[in-house]
Length: 179
Image 1 (cartoon, rainbow, N blue to C red):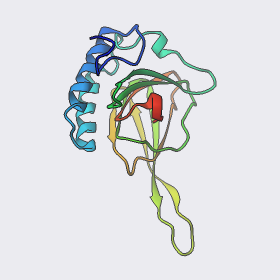
Image 2: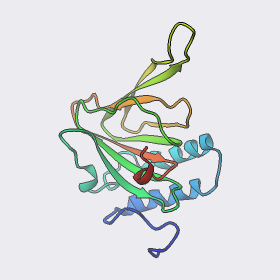
Image 3: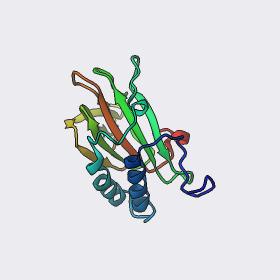
């Protein structure tokens, strides 16, 4: 693959062989141009066999930050078709409540993640629109969750006693757009 290739990696080496294989399999799915929910389902199938594999990420890609969860962009397609990110969490770290700009698939690679999913309660004559917690989910190592907007409002964190790592595949270039 040449640096001018449409699929040239946006992430500098080193990458593991397993990560390269995962990126290739994700590209094969995304390039089909299927609807977002179908793409998310198929991406989840591709990511699942790699979760927990000790040869997927380098030590640098597993590095933590004591002040906040850490994002490592592992790959971003130059055409913006998808991004693969590792989020690394210390105990007690979490996101704010958020949604996404595209479909997303999350797989827990190490540890446990807690997810609170929200639903938007529409405004009425008596009250403004608001978010209401709808579901709490505990996702252990090996769990895969996929979703597409709308309806993807949530908060994610690490409730466990040790480090947690999750892989996130987004249908956009998060290095340019955010997640």
